[in-house]
Length: 484
Image 1: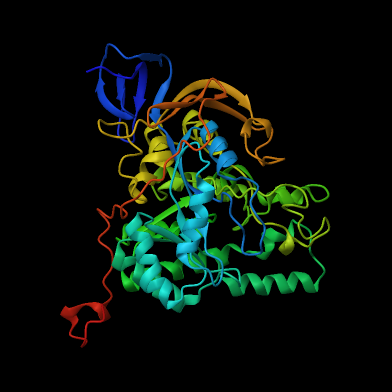
Image 2 (image 1 turned 180 degrees about the vertical axis):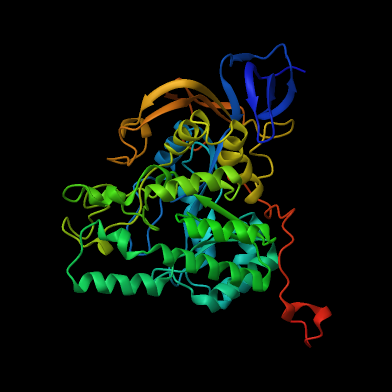
């Protein structure tokens, strides 16, 4: 076979094994794996390097308005470039429905925005207005197109669906083989805390962490899982930030629930002390759920190593440190009026490699699973996330010895700060490929605007997740009419 490209002499790392070998690429796909391969119009020497599947960033807010109307700083061009420099070859940002907006209009809007991407992409829908026509007509059409996941919120007044709305939408998801992602925080707990803090005049950024208690996340995670179990629907808990939340996920997964979860680098690298930086610097670190403490970091690393989480995602939510972003409501705005989120799409994988693999917290195989393979399985990216014949040649070649100090300039996004500024990382991607085309090489962008393609996705891989049948839905229990 004549190959377009042969990657030779590297250590191939998958979610299952590592081995020395060569990879032959033809027409954008992996055509062969062997101990040695000859030929190739281009031969890439990967000696001393680790060859892994390109990262799949499955949690990012790109060209998206928040519920309060703040547009994220990155569009699909800058966001995809930043992702690529961070070792990613595809991503799945959110496409957010505003109240009164049809799902068809949402998809059309994001199709136009995403046309600039330099890497492959899909969307998770955000559903904020589940009217009957949305549930009965529009969502099924989106699923048929290959948009097989969506996100709902248990907090924020403009987004919170309530338990009944959650059950309605989980039922639709189950019927069509889609997966529901959930931001789990108890809305009333948070609002009550906000009132108490406001009454005492406590409005500085540091009080954001106090306003969203760990219990608020833990209660909501438990409630979301029970709602999903009632209708036996797959559920993905996003950005788990607490010890108790991670333990609930671990327990319910052990019991067979159709459950998936992630955490994020900010909960591993930063603490609530960062919110107490001088002046308004702490506003840079406002995200929800909020940053926690050092003990929680250690616990989350333990859960990562033990398999509680499918992925470590960035939750890239870029709002600039100016009046277009964080301070849209003024430089002296109280913490609830400061744009909520922080950037991180380029830092995700270098941080995870350096703090995880290099420091011995996880294996290189776990890194591959957490960065790419599990996201492909969970979100139905059939031809991505693995190095195997027939798969897309989405590949990242890492130099495990490169040392770098993180700066805002090397994030290649449209931000004026990075929360990871000054951190030392070891291990960086030198070459990143998307469908066989080199898009990053030696610190330079090789991709062209718009060369990314939409990825139609399949239902989640639910093997080894038997789920849950409530007695009231079990025909064998003789409770009368079967509702499902």
